Image (cartoon, rainbow, N blue to C red):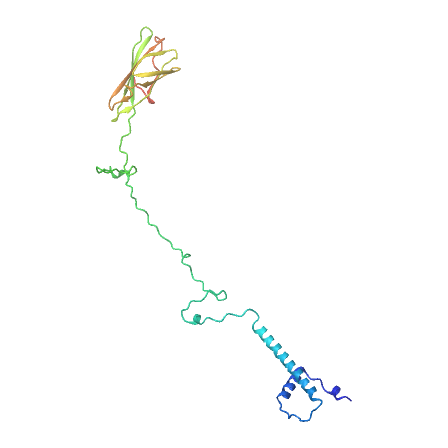
Length: 251
């Protein structure tokens, strides 16, 4: 039988260890040339190549396992010192501090003091040489008093009569401009010989506006307007209405 077939098959690790032990064991070199010496040297060369390949494979596996990606940068020695600022590394968690812009403060506004004097605080005195503001000085001028009017008629013969209207100003300030309205019973009655005003007809109503001499009415004074009413004055010809600036006249 063949001894080689009867031997038990050895694993790669056992073969490698056996080869290493044989390399480390010192054997005397025979002086007689053995035909199988060259064959033994060839085996040793094969084992050495296998060992080198195995070592390279192991080294490659170790490198790949320990460094799968890009190498990490070496730590900064200055960062370990107390009080040293940390770099803005995305992997390093940064503490979230409250921003000063997000701090809200509530301010209490005091009620503004009233600086405008009331109208009942008395008249405002103005120092000579100064001009008071228009909004701080109350208007002290008096309101104009409405004008009054009174009329009277005279004549009545020969189909006509004369009517005189007195416009009075009972106020303390002069008045300028007014409008007198006289309503007659019929539109066929005519007005003429007007003094102190200009007349205009609208049906049976006559409107009188003052001229330059009677337009201003002085305070406490009066002006007069006179005119002639002609037509069928013997029967029901007296005026039916009279007003000065909307205020009824007296007779």
